Length: 113
Image 1: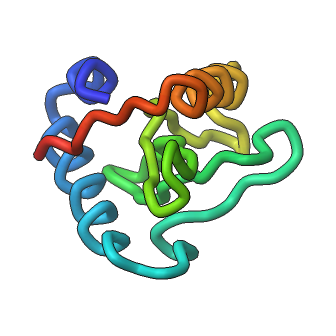
Image 2: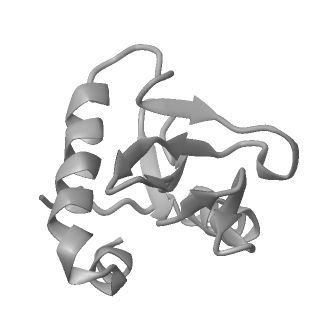
């Protein structure tokens, strides 16, 4: 995630980081995750969660999954939504591959602010 945030334009980088941290803080400890902070995905993205927020009229949608423990959520990658599609176009496939690896290995890295 750090690499993705650092790749963003400098004028939005701090705001994106702050909004993502706010979503994480708001969702921490909630028994059920849901809108408006997070949304379960379906179809080609089944099993993923999108974290939803907007900065400078851009819809940011970091992708996450439950696990490796059922009470944990792991952020897998950064993405944006444009014209109802994720950017990068392979975001769901990449995130699902990372989720599979996390579930196999059971490793987690704590969130850093």
